[in-house]
Length: 364
Image 1: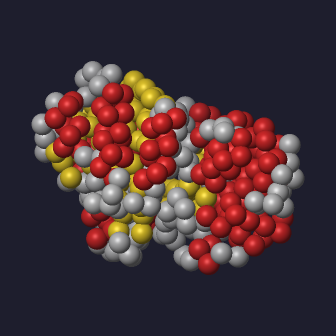
Image 2: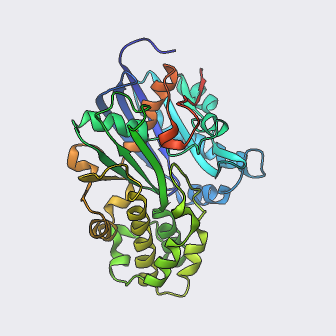
């Protein structure tokens, strides 16, 4: 357990977009955010990214997983080793497979290895306990989003949208005292976001991403494909609900016959439409949608969202937050909650039966 009071925590996140590792410091007492600290980013090299991509869909013990895990640990150790002053580390690992209700969820990388390298306690394996208790194991940032809403002084419901490989929404009512209270948070994955776009431009053009949405902006969405996409049963399930990166692999196949620009425009339109569909589940309207993650740099995606949503759509920087680091900051914050025995998910965020704290703690 940590000492009572405020703690400088260091968090790291490597998302399903496979771009690199974000790391960030947060000063917190496990409830409030007191201050944001230093940040760092380490991009994956092309060989590292290829290795991680080869591990997608694999489970613990499968052939090839150990090599992927070693790469994840090495890159995390390099970026986390740049920081001074941390008292605890939150290590998310790399999600390779996610099948709540089936085989479970698997984030590769050992927190014990990092604890030995860094000489600090490391909280990791955040999702397993939630899944074992009947939850989706994702998304896990909502409790942090609740703290962010308090930090920015929000006094009415607000929504956070993370556009990573997969999109996810958090609806927050900051008038509640704690995130696990009934009615304080609702969260769920919306659908694919950057992952299919990244895969498309990687396969066709050898690029990491559609920079700024330039390719999509030169194309025209195929509305028939978008309509067919929205007929998927996932969109008719009540939240909380979550996705694996490759659950909508058929979407990329559907655009195979389109030009590069039209395919990118169609995948972007599908991602935005999925968010708008998800917003239909909000318990009450919001005046503002705060967008985080790499997708907020895609001007076409943001314009499409503005057209579809009945509220203002802005990057989280508009309220003084760092959209590149929000998920890394979230796992710093969650690490402190785990160490203090506080819940990290609840029925409204993952569908777990009761508020629960996940995570293992490894000490050097």
